[in-house]
Length: 239
Image (tube, rainbow, N blue to C red; front, side, top):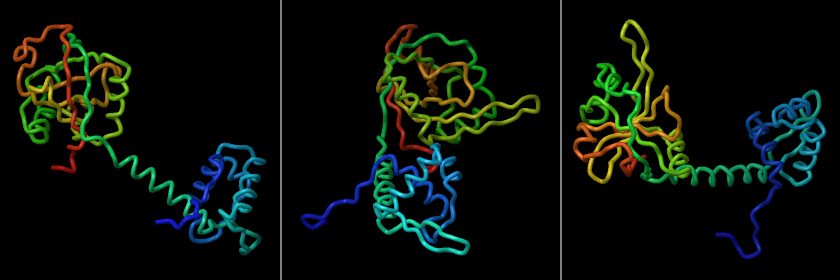
């Protein structure tokens, strides 16, 4: 708890990248010698801007300028380290507070017909059975996502670990890998969403596999609306 009147140290947002670069360069534990030219390249600014940043960081007490062999070096002060620690803690809390699942909505459509072939390949099928716990029906259910929000949520799958399906070779060619996310379609069919490393589709399309023929089981035709609940917390670390 902070006492009344205590204030968290504040820093100009423009100075934060420079402070982070100094940390990455080793200025946490000992003073480092750095030219404004090198610093400017690392932060993507002019030499004048880099020089001004160093002067302001020193003036505000976030770094210290200390004598070292052959001249002077800069080192993060306790206040500078506190700023970076606070930023780290906030980012960590935000990144680790991931949702347990997301819901995607879209319409069924007929794909290009390759799903049955790829899902049936021995190199994939063995991994699906071992890692997902079911033998998938030979084919994928293709779903065109309905809204920009659904597409954004689909893109966010790229930031989650998922269950990895590794690439393999059959002596003639290499087949790419994928990540799977266990999912439930229309609150009825248990299966998985595929996030394929190399695919013909863009982020408006989701491919769903299941141990049954989903179209037949639910009587789905092209244009039918479906909902998929995708679970994000099940990944390779759970196995």
